[in-house]
Amino acid sequence: MNFSLTKEQELFQQMIKDFAEKEVKPLAAEVDDLERFPAETVEKMAKIGIMGIPIPKQYGGAGGSNVMYSMAVEELSAVCATTGVIVSAHTSLCAAPILEFGTEEQKQKFLPKLASGEWIGAFGLTEPNAGTDAAGQQTIAVEDGDNYIISGSKIFITNAGFAHVYVILAMTDKSQGTRGISAFIIEKDTPGFSIGKKEKKMGIRGSATCELIFENCVVPKENLLGKLNKGFGIAMKTLDGGRIGIAAQALGIAQGAIDETVKYVKERKQFGRAISAFQNTQFQLADMNTKTEASRMLVRKAAYKKDAKLPYSVDAAMAKLYAAETAMEVTNKAVQLHGGYGYTREYPVERMMRDAKITEIYEGTSEVQKMVISANMLK
Amino acid sequence: MKIVVCIKQVPDTTEIKIDPATGTLIRDGVPSIMNPDDKSGLEMALQLKDEKGAHVTVITMGPPQADLILREAYAMGVDRAIHLTDRKFAGADTLATSHALAGALRKIEFDLLITGRQAIDGDTAQVGPQIAEHLDLPQVSYLEDLKFDGDKTFTMKRHIEDGYQMLEVEAPCVVTVLSSANTPRYMNVGGIVDSYQKEVEVWGFNEIEVDEKDLGLKGSPTSVYKAFARGLKPAGELYEVGTDEAVGIIIKKLKEKFILN
Ligand SMILES: Cc1cc2nc3c(=O)[nH]c(=O)nc-3n(C[C@H](O)[C@H](O)[C@H](O)COP(=O)(O)OP(=O)(O)OC[C@H]3O[C@@H](n4cnc5c(N)ncnc54)[C@H](O)[C@@H]3O)c2cc1C
Ligand SMILES: Cc1cc2nc3c(=O)[nH]c(=O)nc-3n(C[C@H](O)[C@H](O)[C@H](O)COP(=O)(O)OP(=O)(O)OC[C@H]3O[C@@H](n4cnc5c(N)ncnc54)[C@H](O)[C@@H]3O)c2cc1C
Image (cartoon, rainbow over all chains, first blue to last red):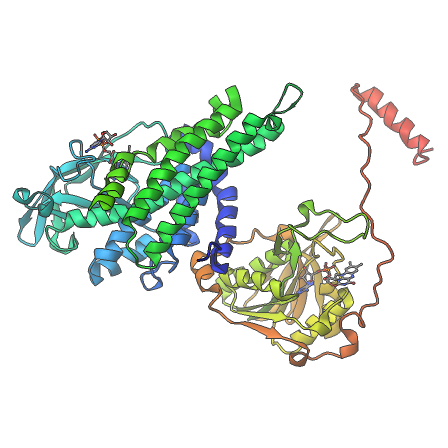
């Protein structure tokens, strides 16, 4: 048993904290305010390898671990949750399934450009009528010679419009339910594929969330990801990995809110002393920090198990459930401890509280995480 | 082209305190970093490598923990790292430090030796120039910029008190670089993953070419007479007045201190 970071991880943490502080934090408020995708940050992250952390060197990645990757999403999200989810969706939901389920040709074609950040990745599972019940896919893919013809639409897709590569799910055999779903890799300029409406959101407002529209979209057969009709399993496994990323995002948001709050309560004076002198403030901080540290342990454990090639699906669900609820609770308390100032955009905790909410919803709502956890207990 | 950069591990002195009883630095809990001027010098070397192709070696003299900055240098993109460490080097002042470094540099081929202008803990700015003297090489201090013609001539921009000096210098030579010269790059993630797989060469007295009497405490003529923390100055006097009156007050004060008469 060992709770220490390795020397590489310590060096990595030093770098990523420094990067987040200098390059990401200064843009966070503006990116939120203007609902602006921080393309320049992605470029900077790409340059130093952040867009391909757990991708092996042979495919142009950094060859790092999932622990490192989770640390990156945590530190980026601590200052800007938008930036955290851009990296998380790109890495966990697009590059990872291509790495895990792709053919050698697909890996050679897509991974180097994804890992280098030249291309951004996205993942399309959710549909207007298939959310938690992802099996209810209405997008269909019909075989046609050397191609599949895809028709339908996806909703709420992160990185849409900015991504070049989309891993999407579609029904290839309606009669078979979940056993009739397949995964495809779709490139931006594929005929019949377009980006629809962009959502206006409560939080993570710099990240693009849009509809994907497929109108007789012609996808070559070599872009089928994994085996025909095995797409549902691919999607579920992809989300297992993605949950580590979102748990890390939630953890980062909570830590970011704590950092801001500790600074604030030492400066703000009421009744002739710093509000940090009140026992209520101290006890709130103690709770916030304890739960955040517990989240960190869960996130790191899930990432560690993925690195060690151990089953980690339940660990990832627990990490996401707990870290997301902690992020919500901690940011709520952070705003409370900031008083009226915390409710304004003058201070970042207002944004953090809005950003936290999504972590309880996407990549499986908290209710879904509880289903995963309890199903494993009762099987 | 072959470049060597001298890098030093220093406590992050932005908030460092001095123990009032002993007059020494309180190092506990202060993170160690690569000296900022040295990191800027390293960036200069890596830019030359990116543009013209170069082999970059970093060298540090310091205790075992100094290994960290060598790993950091690997993660930034250097090709070779040497760690000078030996009991015989302990207790070195700037002169003994420069002798040890020069001793190691006699064993390494280079066209350009880069040091920082000064280390943020010692702040003497002596080590770079001393090395140049020991090795009998031309030296240019306080560098803001450096260009290489691809053959053997460097064009350098040197910061002087009230302006810049442009120089052309032939390799091999020694330069000391200011932290303002470059914004150092971030470590690369792939580089970090590899950094601990790479070899750091550990050199002691036997690996370098130097006279033992020039090393360590024996080779250090500096003796610290007294060290003390700068006392806090009281808050200044504040006048909220117009310009004319302000000028009058300043002149009066300067006269009181006999700076004007
Ligand atoms: C900003 C944002 C980004 C997103 N990014 C992506 C993306 O990149 N790719 C992608 O594919 N999707 C993405 N999504 C979609 C997201 O994953 C879904 O919104 C989420 O899975 C919930 O689905 P839904 O919105 O249809 O909610 P619903 O499924 O309608 O759920 C509504 C409520 O009912 C509950 N519920 C549903 N079924 C049950 C049940 N059986 N038992 C108990 N409670 C239940 C849910 O927990 C929830 O509280 C994103 C969403 C948002 C808002
Ligand atoms: C008055 C005084 C007394 C001291 N007494 C002692 C003592 O008794 N015992 C003791 O252990 N130390 C002592 N030191 C510290 C010791 O001198 C320094 O560690 C070392 O000589 C570097 O000097 P500096 O920090 O002034 O570097 P500077 O001369 O300011 O450094 C210039 C550049 O030289 C290079 N450089 C400097 N040191 C190294 C290094 N170690 N490795 C690689 N490159 C380097 C760097 O590129 C640096 O930017 C003393 C320092 C001072 C100022």
